[in-house]
Image (cartoon, rainbow, N blue to C red):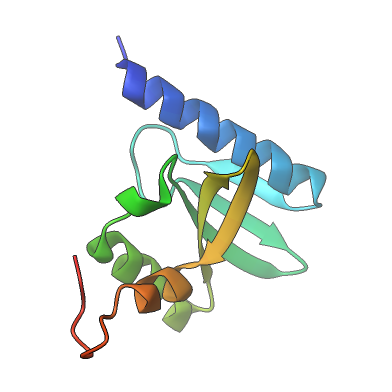
Length: 107
């Protein structure tokens, strides 16, 4: 039986999926804990979406893995809840936010 954390994460993935579908995306969810959580396409542009119930919990490694998809023409996004809404942020934006003032990457 799936744990409570997994169930909450899955429920959030479905919320993100429904939102993207309402916005005209074709969306496929990856069953289990596979990367990325969602693959979406709109206007011929592919998107990889990693869903996090807490944006602070996305690791640098996950962000780098998502950002690397750009070389294949895939737009990498991170979906997370904020003030009752679902935010979609480019993985590169969140990765850049982790660079400290001295140019070193933070955890």
